[in-house]
Structure formats: C-alpha cells, structure tokens
Length: 158
Image (cartoon, helix red, strand yellow):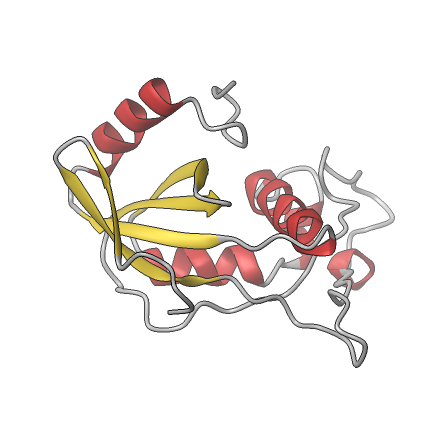
C-alpha cells in the first residue's frame, strides 16, 4: 500500500483504498503516450472531441469490485475528482484504455478528459490514489460530495 491510508472518510462515509494508478512506462521511466485516435475507422469524417487529441496513457487498476459506488482521486492527499459508476471495475477499465471512438464527437469525452489529466499528473511526477465507497445510491452521494468538496477536476468544482 506504500504508506497510503487504508481508508479515507468524508462525513459518515468510509472510502476504502482501491489502489494507486500506475500508467505504463517506457524503459527510461517516462509515461508512455497512448494515441488510439488513428485507429478509428471514421476519423476522416468525424471531428475529434474537445479532449480527443490527448495525450493519453494506459493503466489498469486490478481487484476493484464489480459493484456500484463512488470513487475519489487523491493527489498529494487532496481529493481532485469525485465520480460514480454502476460498475467500478468497468469504469476504471474505460478510463485506462481509451477507445479510438471515444476520441471523436459522439464518444465518451469524459474518459478522454480524465485520462489526459491522469497522464499529465504522472508526467509531472505526481501520483493518484483511488478511494472507493460501494453503494447503490451513488448518484446522490457523488452530487453531495462534489457540491461540498468542489474538486478541481470536476467540471462543477472550483
């Protein structure tokens, strides 16, 4: 666990440590740039979305529950992003493996935006810890947390 707290609390909710994101690195320790855009079959007829140019990285956070919940990205002990998912494992897979289609209009722009923020954090020497709270009422919890914490990576944040 590398000295990270086993849990993080917000109000009455306990978030378990889910892991530290670990992008793929090259032989010199730099974050590898992932560029899926060129593999999209319709790239000549559809424009990139606002975050579709990247840069992107690839990562996998293993052992996450396949249940619904809220997750928090922490950088240097500060919550920078709060998100929700119906399936936490699938959500993190989508963040860490940008599909070519998601780089273009009509794709999942949030995946591209978050992956670029993750890439930049690691390229600048930072790390991102992930904390999770499994709940079926994830939409309400996420909205309350964003309103209260105003995380800088959330669009409705600071």
